[in-house]
View 1 (cartoon, rainbow, N blue to C red):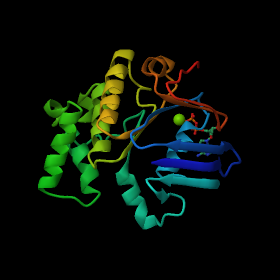
View 2 (tube, helix red, strand yellow; view 1 turned 180 degrees about the vertical axis):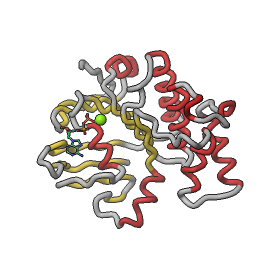
View 3 (tube, rainbow, N blue to C red; view 1 turned 135 degrees about the vertical axis):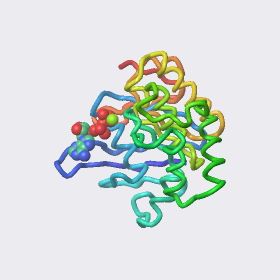
View 4 (spheres, rainbow, N blue to C red; view 1 turned 45 degrees about the vertical axis):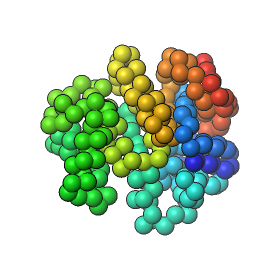
Length: 226
Ligand SMILES: Nc1ncnc2c1ncn2[C@@H]1O[C@H](COP(=O)(O)OP(=O)(O)O)[C@@H](O)[C@H]1O
Ligand SMILES: [Mg+2]
């Protein structure tokens, strides 16, 4: 589903964010991408959605070489790969339902399909009752669930979460993790960057550990000693 072959990323200022990364993620996998702040987790994620290009090496997502893909195909890539972030990135003047529907509208959908798919995504994350609230009227966990619904509304094959619990208290973090594991159980490949050792160690999924841009450990049912 995802393959990185000998990928390095050097930013224009000279920083090497990734070095010789080889990684294969199968369809249906759930992986934790762990490592200290600055280890390269977000950079790896940006390469997967072509927000950045690898300096050397090859990034393949769902059979497509992301670095060589023409610009016109990037939209299609972003429909296949949903992303959620630590800071939710919701549109403050749109309601929960409008935030979710917007992701469909910008990909060219309209009418009944938008209404039905929006309600499906809201129901999946348990936010049907909050559909007409604005982000400022929601708790942090509800805001993150809105972001997850928005990421899922295009039915992506892959969901990427970059520190999705970074702004949440422990109880709310667990609710989000339970939701992400349920989404994975329904067949979506899941990649989650985190430095929350407690969550990683409780779930015992695959753990890919980055340190200074290098993969230093890659274990099934792994642990994370931060
Ligand atoms: N746009 C950028 N320009 C220059 N350096 C960057 C940029 N983004 C990240 N970096 C650097 O790349 C390294 C990896 O950062 P990042 O991928 O954000 O790590 P993480 O998400 O694990 O904290 C860090 O040294 C960071 O300072
Ligand atoms: Mg990061």
